[in-house]
Image 1: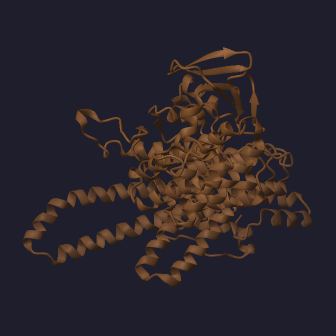
Image 2: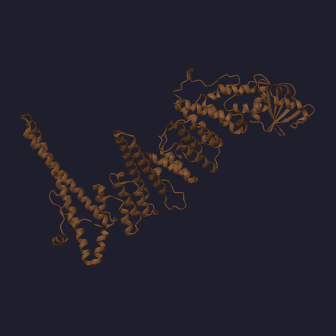
Image 3: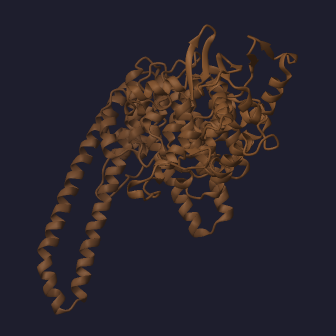
Length: 636
């Protein structure tokens, strides 16, 4: 039918019907050597141009038997004009989802309507749109993508809006995400469907549902930002499910923002990466910033449930990736606040690697962005308070109890996460004591069952900052609650030379209290066991007495073990009392050598509110009775 060959002005397309051509139509760099009659029979515009001859400004006589027509603004370029020309010659033209919009615009440009000729190109393309493209969300996305190069004609013909409406309507009508994808169809102009069949001629949509949903989101991610923004806006206007919107936003962000999914790069081979970079050039920094803010502003609010996507739950790691990118691109403060609040609402899913965000500001000296973490914690506490207030007024007692338990679990998980973050950032030489204390005290006391993790962070900080003043050292240690330290932590702290003397004394005191409580509890348990055994022996029958006789040796052995444990605890208490006595005598010797005013300053520095006599142990007594200072001095 046709052949192409090079010419001096570019490319030339010749019709090989055997008849000499009598018109040359130039579209872009391509010159089409055609015949007048087939073109004039289908296109009103070409009929008028050819009939007008030299009177039309667009026609220029090249030779005696040739007319030259230039179509500089032809929609779709030379390839689409070639398809339109073949249609004029009666050749069957393949119409696909990617070419139907351009062919529709070309038919409108050439005025190939039904009024001019029956079964014309406008009717063919409209029929294909209604019967195939607009019934499939995937094909609608492909057709919408092709409209990016057809402005403004595609917009004037209403094609863009029709594709957007089709996408949103199909997505809204489909509750199952797996069925959002339409079957890929390649259809001839006469409506013949030669879509790919499954094995044995049976289609298996259930097997391919997950892949279909992923493919639909990937297709939507190929749109340019203006069209994609229109699709998302239309979805939100129709109150589409947050699952669809959020999954689409994630897919679009991962495809369009460089470096956002670095962890998945090893899964893509070099050929795929090269093809992706060739088809999707790197956007500029301004385009990336605009794209990022569009994605952030369209994310569901923080109080909405996390969606479930085909690739898994919307993780906090992805949100932290958006936040890092927003910091690098210096996105607006509102966009970063939206992200921080979104992260705060799902902080229980975060990990230490997520919180370790590098600081990109020249004004911040710390290695990691601790200010951002502090803001996220404040938003986290605000949401917990708001949730608690809402649940108190809206739910009954049982549901309120479940919600309180859920909030407590979130708070405990946040406390563990913050202890890990503090331990990691405490070694930063540029982290000031005030900032460290603010981070440590950002969460309430109920966020930590034990303060061992906080003690570890304090120890790391004191080790990394040996030159801080004694006052700052004491302020750093005051973030801990010594009563919430375990015996292992107390033992380590009592021998820690980096802790100030006041902290060591308080650790020893509370360690003694813990040991005394443990001993008292053991004694009470032993007495209760003995009393229960006596009452049981007195009230049971002869048969129970016989069974008790069999159990007596084991009970005696258990009592012996308990007494041995109690003796061990007593020896430990005595050892601690001796250490406390030595420490007390050393303090008294320092007091005797110093002046009266120095003694007062030392007492204020230690801040000990208890008498040293509490270290003296009495049998079956948790805390010894207080005695006067004079009596204590005489005993010494």
